[in-house]
Every structure is written in C-alpha cells, then in structure tokens.
Length: 209
Image 1 (tube, rainbow, N blue to C red):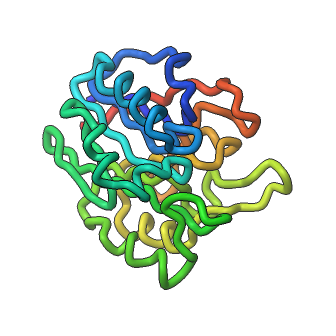
Image 2 (tube, rainbow, N blue to C red; image 1 turned 45 degrees about the vertical axis):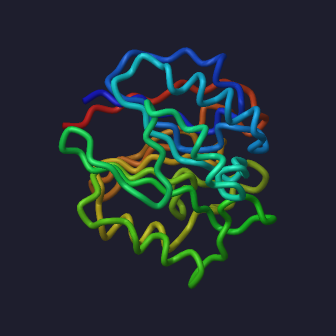
C-alpha cells in the first residue's frame, strides 16, 4: 500500500500538489484556529481526494474538534476515517491516531507532561503498524528553530520504542520536517509548512505491506 503523508496544512490545503497513492494521512493542524468554516472547507477538500482511504487526526490548532466534538464529528464525511485516541484496521494494517501534544499555552488537545499525558500513550495497542500523533517524540525531528531545543514528548518516545510500529508519522514542529529511521521505526515529520507558515515541503510517500 502506498501512503501519502501530510501534516500542518493550516488551511493552505488547496495549494498542495499531491502524488498518487492508495491512502492519504493528515497528522493534524488542518486549520488555523479550528473555526467551523475552516473545518468545513478542509473536509470538503479532504473527503473528495482521489485515494481509496483517507485518515486524519486533529492538532493543537483544531479547537473545534476538542471543544465541540459532536458538532465537529457531524462535519466529518463518511469518506474520511477520523481518529481520536482510537484505531482502525485497513487491509490488515493497524493504524492508531492521537491529537495529544504536551501543554503549550493551552492550545487544543494539550496535556501536561508526565502523569497527565501518559494515559493517552498507554492506549496505543502493542500491535500498531502505523502510529499517527500530532506531536513528535522527544529528540526526533522535534527541534525548534529559535534555539534548537528538542520539544517532543519523552513518554511518547518510550511508548514508541516499546511498541516499535513500522511507521510513526507526526507534525506540529514545522522546522522538524523530514524522516529518520531509529530502532527499526521510520519516524516521519510530515509538516508541509515551514516555521514561517510557507508551503515549502513536499508530501512524504511511504510503502507498507
């Protein structure tokens, strides 16, 4: 299966040039502030993309998904699989998605590091093949431009190292765009915007059986 990976489009999705594939995954922050009109516009676009499967999670900018979950869910078309600390099996491949990120100025889906965020990672099944989180694990494609500090989640890193999915895709830290393989896990930061919110990065392609 060929999967196209994107993240952090922040309402610039109409400008994307997407390669062909079997599935597309969006790892959150599809809106600027999670307003209803932004969510409607995104799903109108995403739900009609020419892929057999479309999976997405929310991110810290997508406030409607957390603050008004029932109204948000009504905007998710039947052609889209929306994951929120939940999973799905597609053609035998196990996907799990979570929008949670470490607390930062009280954005959407923020949780305090440590005891508050840990239960979310404990939900991830041990047999997950493709893990989708909005934020990165600690010290992997997570360094911010202002001072080069790693800002990812240590507890998420420990969980990923234990579970060892084939692919862990995320975004959130735009300047961390890229991929690396560590311990048999392919880590992918799929942010298509840079730290200045310019659309400069290409969607990432991945093959998984």
